[in-house]
Length: 356
Image (cartoon, rainbow, N blue to C red):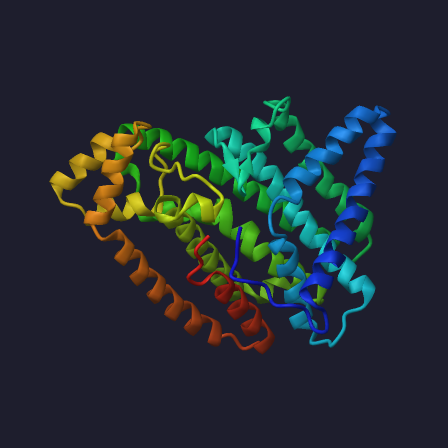
């Protein structure tokens, strides 16, 4: 997930900050590798896990880690966080990244994707193949071990466990909904609608990538999540906006720039663009969509993209982006907590009008 840039924590330069994050990552990875070394007692297997974790957890830009530490820093209003505070915030952020790695390894297999973050998907790497399924399960099992090691005994430990469990439940539910709806959509494209789309975007993206980092920061700061229902709703809406951006870039983005080859049309995905096309097209245009959507033939894909252009979906997207920004700013400024306002605006501005 690329963003328009992440603000540095107070008193910390960007380069130093990333080095500190990597140092904490290396410590956490060493701990789980030590667990494996005790249980497996096979050096080759441990080396495989070492390489696999680096390839998948470190493949992104560490934004979820940065979201936690930056949010916590704002909530604490401290010039300098203690080493323990930094470590705990970063550890929670890395656990989110570990969870995300688990999700994307399996998602790429299910979608038969070829590239992720500008390089081959893990399961396509030579000698990996469907062993990637077990690798994903290993990544998932690292998370509770890390949390237990560093947070057991903390007053918010159970809340953290609940957050991560809920995140996994939502993502796997979203994956199933995505699969079922895509299967039905291949037979009847009119099954796709705004309500279904928003459910999938919420479950697969918004909750764990946008809400969980802030929820972790709030718990670290001693807050009760029950008092921040509106904040959760705003973050979910920002996350859905992010997914809509992804869908737009899947079709209109440059793969050389985005790092991913778009396949939503070929895979008959319930994307925001096809939902908008169904809403804005006449019967003749719908027939073009029905005849060509979900087919891997480049000529069919080109016809769908031409239809999107004919329907001015790029303009529809720009108008949506303008309206959702205005709405989100108004909702954010209605929040009574100024620190929370700052966090929410930071999240929104990191993705607003992103190009990759």
